[in-house]
Length: 250
Ligand SMILES: NC(=O)c1ccc[n+]([C@@H]2O[C@H](COP(=O)([O-])OP(=O)(O)OC[C@H]3O[C@@H](n4cnc5c(N)ncnc54)[C@H](OP(=O)(O)O)[C@@H]3O)[C@@H](O)[C@H]2O)c1
Image (cartoon, rainbow, N blue to C red):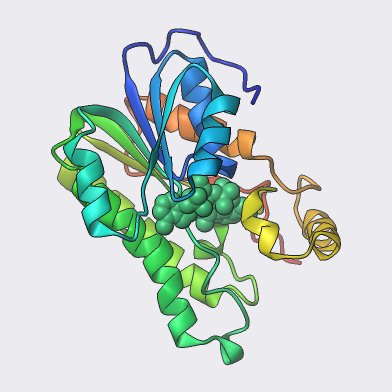
């Protein structure tokens, strides 16, 4: 994966863990840190995806197979992780989307398990294994503070995560806690939508987005990299949406 580096040694001697780093936004973020000299660990459930991602990312990158919904697996990961300078949490499932009237509450609960509880479980388990003035970056979603029909469930679980960012930043300081909130990004997350339908959907979403297109994982990766690198930013949720969530009056 080619992602330009800010400096080939900006993250030298630093350990960065990207939970959900075997695909999409997490993989692109891992590539930015690896390009800057970090020792990067990417996690995910599929060994095949991890092996392929590690080969694409290159540098000092390793993979660790782990299910973030499994408390024992998360604890076991941190028990052997050593001190982590920067943690990025990009795990999620696709459950919890759809029109509210048809929304199955068990499906919404599965969405919370796969993203809200998984991300919170990881941050809690990581405490004590993070450099005291290191950073945590969560990945939320534009749905948290927009009004896109069909996203009430996703708004709830991403909004719950975003609400925790400022109080956690105050409580856990000097550890820095931030989030990046992406708009629609062309990643394998959308593979559950058939290819021809997906392109038509992306075209429609692009037309409704001020920058006129959907986003690329590398663009979200640069926002994540900036938050980890800038020691004076904490408690922030940074939008990376192409303007999709702006109140344009349309
Ligand atoms: N793509 C978008 O349009 C978009 C928009 C807004 C927000 N986001 C958010 O951005 C984050 C990254 O999404 P993405 O688009 O990059 O998705 P993606 O390409 O599907 O990547 C998800 C990553 O998380 C891993 N993962 C998923 N569930 C896991 C679990 N239970 N335990 C461990 N690893 C797990 C996946 O690997 P395995 O499948 O092998 O476990 C993969 O590495 C998510 O939080 C998503 O909600 C995405």
